[in-house]
Length: 194
Image (cartoon, rainbow, N blue to C red; front, side, top):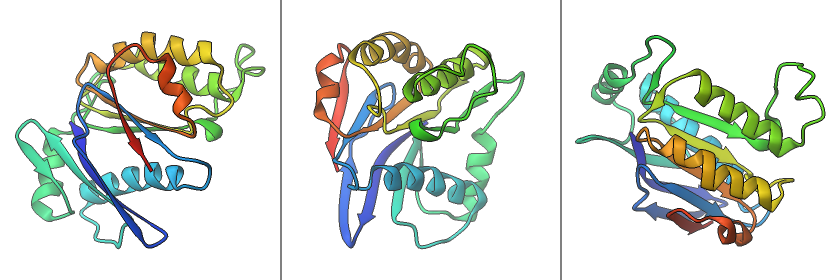
């Protein structure tokens, strides 16, 4: 499952992002206050609305692809199809959206996490989730990826752990402030400017 198309309305302006791919890193770049968090939250809300067949005036509309199935605006048929393909058994996750807002990750109080930086906590949470569960055909959204992060962490995560995430037909969507992040990526990615 992956998001293939996004229509984003921000401050009255509409932007269409197309050709997002599965098994790929999709990076959305924009300066502070450009709407990056609004975009990522909107994607998660749009997915929830499709599952629950809720009609709202969303500022983010998404097209979700799963095999030969295209899921767009909420309707009863789509809600039924989504629930049929969303499977959880033995702690496995399939066809879900995992949302990681870097600045708002909360970890259990453990000795080894108390002194971690903001970004380290986010990566720790992602790794913990993927080590504990078989997650496949899902969408991983990381908001504010380059917040308080050093180049070594970017290289280690993107060029190392992200490849593990992508192997199970997952899609990674990242928002960040600077294009500098792309200088450290050695695997294929797609870039979009917000």
